[in-house]
Length: 294
Figure (spheres, rainbow, N blue to C red):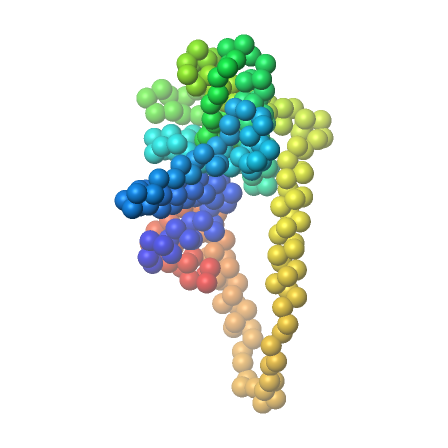
């Protein structure tokens, strides 16, 4: 199995959490490489300018997509690396209690809410008068996911390297404290956006306990477009098929048994991925799953 095939298989079987990491890495690497090569020919394009969120609310009038796109782009390799580590950690906690659709919905809505907190901060806080800045990175969305898990089960214990066993609320306190300590820095707006994302994660769980799922709207929109695509595929005219009226006798029972065994093996491999991650598979299991996926 080639590296490309291996990555495709991980993308298909890793769930929304894995796909979010793939999208973040891809949207950083591909534009960086492409526009980096253009500089060799004297063409300098600041592509981040078109996808980052400006502190001036008027910028949304000509690039309204930036309230979402800023949360899937990053300004540098270390910015991306750190965020993806925390995203991986946060999504594993989140999926323990919630489903994949809620994860995607919270990532999107948490990023939007954090973006509006950022814009509002520059409108009302005296410290930001006569200043402007831009916001980029998945931190607001990640904070929403992390604090949703913390709010749902603050006393859940996890083991951290070099630290030992800690409870989720301990991690939450440290993260909030770090953002508050760094408010006087040049990235004060970014830290306020982090706090906004954390508050939205808390709000999501609080309302969910009362019967209101804030991610329902996002799920319905995604399902709407997914159904449109599916119905378009199904409406494709069938090709004319010539039926063979003298088919060769087949042994249906043996095929069914083979299919059941194959499906059973697939289920066992997927259970192993869910429990220990894709990297825990052996080369034979990866190859088998890739062939089955085809």
